[in-house]
Image 1 (cartoon, each protein chain N blue to C red):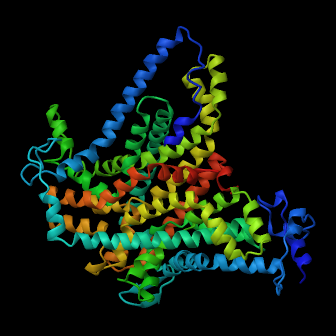
Image 2: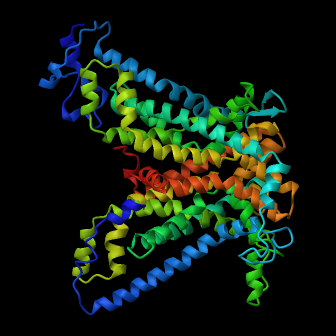
Image 3: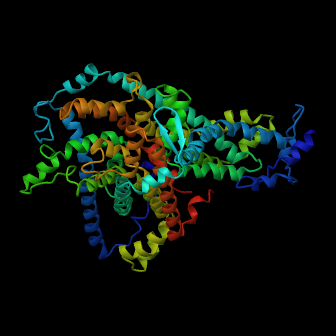
Amino acid sequence: MTDTAAEATREPGPGGASGASSTANSGGTGASSRGRTGRRDRPNRMSRKHREWLAAGLFLAPDGLGLLLFVAVPMVLSVVLSFFQVSGFGSYEFIGFGNYERMLNDPLFWQSMKTTGIYVVVLVPVLFVVSLGLGLLVKQKLPGMAVYRTVFFLPYVISLVVVGLLWQFMLDDQVGVVNKAFRAVGLKGESWLGDPSIALFSVIAIFIWVMMGYYMIIFLAGLQEIPQELYEAARIDGAGPWKQFRNITWPLLRPTSFFVLLMSTVAAITGGFELIYVLTQGGPANATSLAIFYIYQQAFVFGEYGYAAAMGTALVLVMIVCSLAIFKITKGGRFDDGE
Amino acid sequence: MASDTTAAPGAARTRPPGPGRSRQRTARTGLTLLAIVLAAAAFFPVLWMLSASFKTRDTVNDGKLIPSDFTLHNFVYVFTEVPFARYLLNSFIVSAVVTLVALLLHSMAAYALARLRFPGREVVFTVIFSTLLVTAPVVLIPLFLIVRQLGLLDTYAGLILPAIFNAFGIFLLRQFYLQMPRELEEAAIIDGCGYWRVYWSVILPLSKPILSALSIFFFLANWNAFLWPLVATNNPDLTVVQLAITSFQSEHTSAWNYILAAAVVAAAPMLVLFFGFQRQIVESIKTSGLK
């Protein structure tokens, strides 16, 4: 290959920067004057194009292999495992749909799915409203706002284990500060983590406290992208805060809302393990045994890897269905267009 | 967060004076009060934990925010009765190695995806992107079996390797590289630099802002990780700090002054990091959102 041929396949034109697909380099006619000034004396064994392919492969290889081995293969293996009975160390026996049959007849599995359902259905909307509210609040230019933002976000950087310990201390029936406060104003207080009808909601409340700052920041970013002039114009037209929210903020915030909804749903379906582990161990009376916690127990406490994998696969299916539903309902396109 | 205050600085001043002025001021005062109350409520649990960690065994449940007999004994206890320094070191090693390796590998992959042209690029990207939906807890079991098969249970490698690979970082870096101007890179190619040189001496230095933001984010996520260390390690020498505080709790039931001191020690590095690099953390979350 000669230098000129190598240069011709390069595409220094301005159009090359964004989203040029792999086909775009075939007809590289636009070698600019700047392109021609560069003189390379190194002999070119491979064509420029092929060198670029090779380089791309090498750059992608380490991460690609890692993702393959530690993400993609486990994903596939999870499905494969679900058809096996795995006992103790290393003996695998194919049992067809046995694990799934067992799952469908396992009342604890259904209870864990129901618990997860309640958890998601309560957590996602409340978290959405709270974070949007905080986002709207901290967007205002008020004295000390930077401090409030920091404070709202702070719980997010604390690990869920520490959060669990901290709230266990605060919610203790006898000595916890929450019940002390209740008693101080003449109320009885509750067994926040000990009462099966309350415990799950305590966990949800704690999780909202942890995550609200994170989604607040995402909402804030979305809000700040809305052009200020729109509000100015609306104000001149006499639109009040509610009208401004309804007609400007809400529609323009749609991509952000979609993103938050999707992420928080996915996170809620498979998340929350640490809090449950520290706060309740799934109790009382399995009231807080989220699916992910039950799966963990089956696998790592009882050694039922195959059965746990079947439930994990079911959970992934639920997650995919929910994500698709959110996509459909919100017509949320903009999220994955990449550029 | 500092950058936010610069947005539309003139907006407040251009408003015409009139009867709406005083109502607006009341609204602003109301909002400020609301923000103060909410922030105080949100901050209270953290404050309560800090306060309890400085109380004695006898006063930890006294319900006072200011410790009446302030003591550092709990922290001394945590570091002398339990090898907490070792746990912190383990967490540090794992988090630091994961962060460094992940940033290098992710930025390499992102560079290829954003800047190099090769057949199937969009497909590769879509495949990588779709692994974002595979959340860690769900592949926990097969991952555990793979790592066990590789003989990596109870090793640093077993803690570190699976934590490195996630598409989130690749995705963010790719977005960043797509927006970067091409000129410098092209000049380097014209000068005869190979792709590695271009990446190493042009792309990497230019990615400093996003790399520093991501590094804090990765470090934080790995420091706080719990589930994988829980299943992947048994050896007390490899215990990370998040695991350590849960077993510390079960050994010290209701000795809340000790438990919360341990919790504060586990959380302290993240709090320091947060107050030091708040802006980067917030920026990296913002970019993770959209665009």
